[in-house]
Structures are given as structure tokens and as C-alpha cells.
Amino acid sequence: MTALGIDLHLDLGAGGEPRARAIEAALREAITSGRLTAGTRLPGTRSLAVDLGIARGTVVEVYAQLVAEGWLVSATGSGTRVAENRVPVAKSAPAAGRAPAAPRLLDLWPGRPDLSLFPHALWSASVKRTLPESTLDYGDPAGRRQLREAVAAYVSRTRGVLAEPEAVVITSGFTHGLALLARALQTSGVRVIGTEDPGLVHHRRLIHGAGLATAPLPVGPDGADPAALRPEWGAVLLTPAHQHPRGVVLSAASRVAFVDWARDRDAYLIEDDYDGEFRYDKHPVGALQALDPSRVVFAGSTSKSLAPGLRLGWLVLPPRLRLPVLDAVALTGAIPGAPAQLALADLLRRGDYDRHVRRARQVYRKRRTELAARLAALTPVPLDGVPAGLHSLLPLASRREESRLVNAGLLAGVRLMGLQASGYWHSADEPRAGLIIGYATPPQHSWRPALDALAGLLNGAGIAPW
Image 1: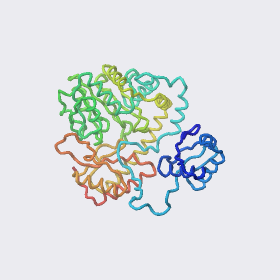
Image 2: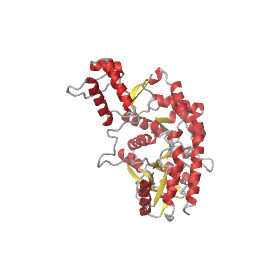
Image 3: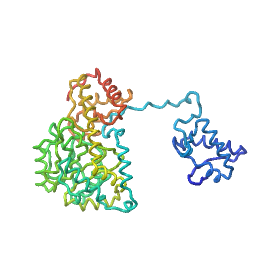
Image 4: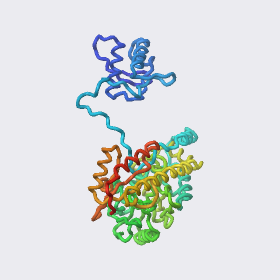
């Protein structure tokens, strides 16, 4: 059956049970089975009564009984909803064979910021300011002009990018941008893209999905090694400011060598500036793109600065790649929604985005310092790379040691990522092991417990260097 205003299915059966008791039983069954989850809003008493063809007083009686039992909650102005802490079917011990719920893990996986830092009030205010009716029509496939202008100004000011609004294309995050680039490069004649080794396996899969091959580019203490470049490659994917996952910075000499190679081979460099705003020991190194905007694609997003769920990013493109990328946008149809684009543009223009990044930078700087100090007391092995970003790599001597610590972490309630287990290595002859510690991931209240748990795991582990 359906109720006016809100649809709701209830199986009332065909027995002779009084209607009130049948409705109560049906609602209990829907809640305990999980069909009605915590917080689900129920139809109003008048609407449900009309739909069922019964007196409204009967529905009022049913709701009142279930509220008294703890199944529902009711408040003036907000209606009746399924209770957050629902009464279980049986108040005794769990049924035989049913395992108790697992405790929530302390999450130290890399790749996400502390979502509890998200500026909810500022974002909501920007949405309200920028949501007139006229903005909800189809927009420019390159992105809203307001956001392209704001992004061009921001990356020019903070990252040293040479950008005009016409060069910017708004994406649904970096992975979407890389997928568009791979399609565009494939149509432009590129067949092989070099990718850092170690590097994210998901990026290699995206490139393969566009019909391109990938080849490994070894990463050393000075970043990706330009000596390993090959003439058959048409592009290279780099993380120059803070290599993922090793955390090293691409040296000045290597930057020049990569740009010279791209010019000589009529090739492209893709600069993934995924956490370039977060450097803690000195001013962040500027963007590689400034050395040659005609050969370097600059890619950024809000996934590390604000939240990955916003699905907002950008590409600053060389002129020759703009139309191929827009063709790829047209083929995929994946354009970020106008409200989110306009809200981000507002945050950038008002300086609220800068202020949020500075606040987050202070939090992450403190956590990274605390992590390094705690580990220094437990092992002589230093964290790899520079103090920057949202993660650090702790080198380990073997895959066996990595696997042991990751598994021990799960038993202790700590979620850890291993360098080998997660497929970071492409085809290195002797892939190394390590823990990629996402110190930015835990919410504020969980950081210290997570750090304590990690220290407990490493205490006495006898960690050896590479």
C-alpha cells in the first residue's frame, strides 16, 4: 500500500487480527528486517489512515504504542521516525551461531582527510548564496565559468600554475580527470603512459580502461627517475610535490629533465597535485606546470583539502588537449552538479577555502610531528619522504613483516595499508615493503587512540630498514 505524501509498504496479512495489532506487527517486522532503517521518516497519521481506509485514531494508537516500546520516535514538527537505537527482536543473548558485532576499527588508511574538519557551516552558506533558479539549467561541459575563474586564480596564486579560465576543465575528482585525459590522449595517438613505481594501481587501471598501456617509472629519493624514460611513451603521470606513496619530492634537475623530454618527444606530463597545499617544514614547491604549460597538464581536486565525497576537481590543460578532453566529457556525460560547483567558487572567492586549508594544515602538521616522534622512540627507521601531505611511509624489511603488522592491526582494531599488499608496485625487480600511514584519516577524537594503538603494534617489532 502507499500513503499520501510518503510511500510505505506494509504486509498486513489476511488473518482476523485487529487492524491496530496487524499494523504494529507489520511495522516491527519492517524495522527488525532492516527494510526501515534508523531515522526513516514514516507517513503522517492522517495520510496512513486514508491510505489504509481506517480511522486516524487507530494509526495514532499504533504509533503511540511503538514509541512507548522504543521502536519509533516522535517530535512535533519533524514527524515520526524509526528510532536510532531500536529495540531488538529478542532482549536475551544473541541467537546461536550469530557473531557479536565487530568493534569499529581505528582507521589509518591513506587517501582521505579528517572529514570531521569539513566546514559545514561555510559550505551550507555558500550553497544558499549561489543557488538561484537560473543556475540549474545545462551548463558548459568545461564547468561553470565562475568556478573556472576561481580555480585559475587560486592555483595561480597558491601553486604557481600559469592558468587562464579557458584552460580549466572542471571534473568529478582526479580519477575522473585521469579517465578523461586517457581517452583524449588515446585519440591523439598516444599508446603508452609511464606511471610511477610504486604508484596507485587504480590509476593504471583507469589508463588501461582507455585502451592504453602503462610502463613502470622507478621512484628514488629524488622522485621519479627521468633516466628510465622511453621514446615510445606518449605521456607520463607524476606526483612531483609529494610522491604517492613514498612522500619524496621531485628534484629540480629531474623536473627540467622531464620537461625537456616532453618537448623533444612531443609528449605530455600529467601533474597530479593531490595534496600540494600541505607542506609542513617549508613553503611548498611550486607546480611543475609552470616550466611549460604547453606540455604539462596540472590536475587538482578537493578530495584531500575538503572531502572526497564532493567529487570536484580540475584540469589545467595545454591548448592542444582542450578539445579532445571536452570530447571525452561529451562521451561520458559526467559533469559535476551546478550547486556544488558554484558553492566551491564562492568559497574560493571569499577566501574561506584558504582559511580552511590553513586550519587543516595546522592539524595535520601536528599529527605528522607526533607520529614521527612516537615512531622515533620505537625504531631507528625514519619515515620516508618529507613532512607533507596526509600520509607517511614507514619502510619495512620484508613483505612478511608488512603482512604480519597489517594482520596484527586488524586484530587490535587498527586498519593499516601495506605497500605490497595494496598493489602499489608495478613491475619492480625487488619490490619493497612498508606501512602507508594515513595520519589525517581519523577524526579528531580518534587520532590519539589510533596513534597509541599503532605504537603498541610496533613496540618491540624490531623493524629493520630497507
